[in-house]
Image 1: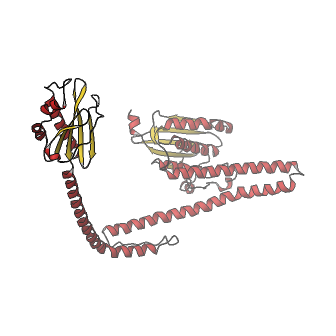
Image 2 (image 1 turned 120 degrees about the horizontal axis):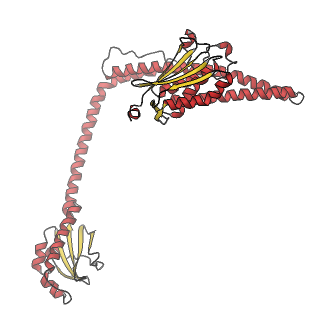
Image 3 (image 1 turned 90 degrees about the vertical axis):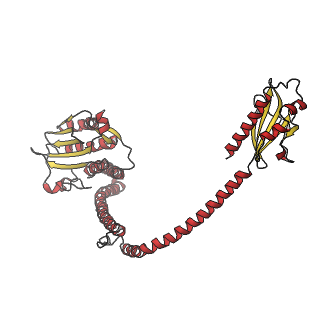
Amino acid sequence: MLNQAELHARVVARQIQRTLAPFGLFPAGSDQAIVEVIANQSNLESWSSPTTLVQIDNAEGQPIGKSTNTGSYFFPPDTSLTPQRPTKTTVADNILIFDEALVENGRVVAVAHVGERLDAMQQVLTGARDILLVVTIFALVVVVFASIAIASLVLDPVERLTEAMEEIGSEQLDRRVRWTSRSDELGRLAAAFDRMLDRLQDAFARERQFISDASHELKTPLTVINANAQMLRRWAERDDRIRADSIKAIIDESAGLAAMVNGMLLLAKADSGEQIPKEPVDLSAVAREAVDFLRDKAHQKGIALEIEAVPGAFVYGSGGLLRQLFTNLIDNAIKFTERGGVFVRVRSEDVTVIGEVADTGVGIDDEALARVFDRFYRADKSRTRAVEGTGLGLAIVRSIARVHGGTVGAARGAAGGSVFWVRLPKEEHIESQ
């Protein structure tokens, strides 16, 4: 509405400017000449309207004519207008004022003030405010009564469902709501709550098992470190061999503890999933990097380490975590292979990319196949301390595969040994390019 008022004022000012154009008032122009040409009462009344006020000032800012509807009101003089800045818009006394310099031969000969009353706009805004206020109050009343009516329909079953939920605590996760007789939204909510309790019960069980396993795994190295520290305090100054052996044991066990803690941190990072930045990754290139990293370790043990990978096997994920996945699988295969070799393959199928790590080692029995990816699980208990590791490597592999939307598995090799595989969704867009 303000823009409309200013536009109308500009139109009137242009009419005044066009009225002046055919006459040459400068340099012989005078106030009387301006009055005769543009500031005569006939022109002023034709430009004005019930909401439009018109006043003409001379170059010095003195009024020399105005429309009768201005009454006793005078527009404030404006001598700041120049041929380079001939217009100015202000709002004063509830009037939008548009000032335009009347320029002739590069000189300001007069100033036209065109004012638009804003009373009508204020009335419209006041009316709109009153309408909105009434509508808001009415809508509020409707919403309140509708809310009460709806709440009365659902309050009772919700209260009963709440009471049932409150009876279930962290030590009673085996209890269920079991509202099988309801098929409405509350029935589906109760069923979803029961399914959530199933997941929570499984998660609590896994967490308790993890804490138990972690405590068991941490107990032995901590005991060794403490025992050797006691020996250092008692015998270090008298027996150089005891001092050297104790220091070596402390260093080895603390390094194992650090590896175990790093494995737990990596496992937690992989389990979080959402915080991992992902991008298109060539799984073949990642597998080759892991093979190159562990090639010396395999050669030192006297076994072969070979890779066969198709180019351009792209997946969407974290290159660092996927590299850790292959590193863990290959390192695990090297640990349990005494002769022969470890063979890595990456191939592409219709919608998936498959990575395999096969070895000619001791193999895995049927009982171990079901638990080999559990945290801290060791297939050969007798070799738990003999074989280097934390028992977290394959658990980390499974977690990394999960956050990438994939699966892992293990099987006994046809010619002996073991085969571990990971199946990940293919990154279609990159492969198509």
